Length: 442
Ligand code: GDP
Ligand code: IMO
Ligand code: MG
Image (tube, rainbow, N blue to C red):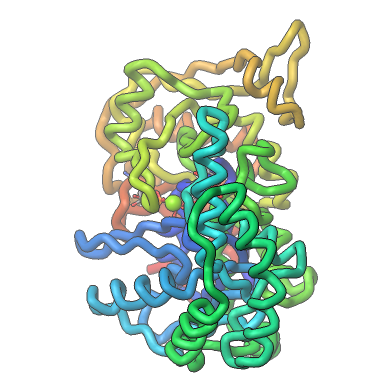
């Protein structure tokens, strides 16, 4: 299997958690490379629900090593709570199987306040962030006033960083947001407390990963969010504040681009979006509502209802291009079971112009009319189907249509939220990767 990167191809929540979970069995290391606890990756295991926020999904597999890379931003309090919550569910977490890059940046309490207060001030023009302080933490990193989690181990560095950052933050907290200032002493004490709890998890994870690669270990790089939420390539400004596309795996983990052997995109059989921003194929009718209900489309992090719409092949072709996707895992096929007709957007029309390439302008995305290809629904339950041959012909036709339209290999068709409710496609690229590493799907 070597080193494989898994990314979301839409606006997040494609089912990355489920796909990373089933593939974790075939690798040694699972590593997150961007985002923070804005992510919510859900896995069902024997009817027990697990939601991973900043910890890699691979943690549910005993005897695997999980890594949180330098590209991730970490709220130490949320991290500690996540570890405790998972332990309560029986998940084995210890510094030996969860290594955190010393270079990962911290989400400070004022980052959260800035996030929430800015959203309040924006009113109806808000982005609809998760309110976790992600944007402000990445801003501080870029502005070079951020703090790394490794700084928690060095009181002198920590003191200097706090003294450097706080005057500006406090001025804004007091005068612009009209909220409470933060005392440097209190913040320092809080950080020292976190340092004591977290010190054993911290490591130079780039060294660990590169060594593992030299030893021939198999590695999964787990993306969070999705291509359309990428800070550079997404529907700016309605995006998150990190690069979510596959290229970020190298940057957010500290290895060279030549080390990646395969890139897999996770795609829902339809589209969802949580938060504001353009969504050309959005359905605001009963069909959209039925997909939301059947797909249980409510945010794993904030519980907000997800907006639902048809599959957007224009967006997907764009995701294939900017990520360099080689193969796709198609999830939530079973959610479309009840529909007599399924639509796929193959182009956008805007002011007499037809777009087959995803346009840069949010304005065009907001105003365009999708061009749809209608496909006959299968109207049978496929929930839990495990063999491709057992799918109704019309379901196969939908898969084939997507494959031909997108001109990409499809490796997995997911038919339910449990591990076993998954079809591995014979002779797909993933199949070849697994065979190469001698770790066959049984
Ligand atoms: P992620 O953020 O990409 O990991 O996705 P989320 O976990 O936020 O949302 C995906 C939801 O769909 C989760 O509740 C999964 O359990 C569920 N899910 C994943 N694959 C399937 C599938 O094939 N069928 C159904 N019905 N649910 C699925
Ligand atoms: P996973 O990994 C879906 C969205 C938010 C908002 C925008 C910016 O579970 O797919 P942020 O808090 O990041 O500044 O919010 O990004 N968003 C997600 N949407 N899935 C996610 O993660 C998301 N993480 C952030 O809803 O629109
Ligand atoms: Mg999610």
